[in-house]
Every structure is written in structure tokens, then in C-alpha cells.
Image 1: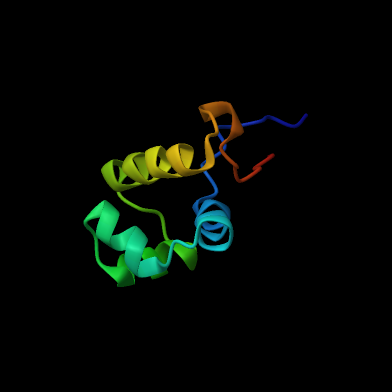
Image 2 (image 1 turned 135 degrees about the vertical axis):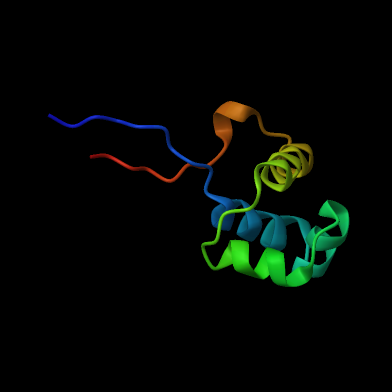
Length: 79
């Protein structure tokens, strides 16, 4: 039996969308979130941001893309 668990936000996908569709560089994202550029690079590489940074990033993504919580791309994990 497969159990669906909480699916984490796909920060990599969200970052790519902001970079490609909204001309947001890693530096711009880092500036807006008040984090280092290397932190943003780490998130793109698969590292997970601290909750507060992730929450602010999701708000930025929703604002720039005009999308809702339900439209947040998620990492599909089925066990």
C-alpha cells in the first residue's frame, strides 16, 4: 500500500520559474530575501532553506507569478 506523505515545496522549480519568466537572478532573489547569493545557489542545488527564508521565498514566488498556495510546485514523494 502506498502512503502519500507531505510533499515539500520544489524550491528549485520555483527558482527556475522566477529566473526564466521574471528575470530574477540569484543575486536579486538573495537581495530581496536578505540572504547570501551562495544560500540561493545552495537551494537551487537541492539544499532546503530555513523555514523563515523558505516562507518568504514562497511569498515572493506567489507575488511575482500571481499563483496561490495550491499551485506551489511540490516534490512528489510516494512511499
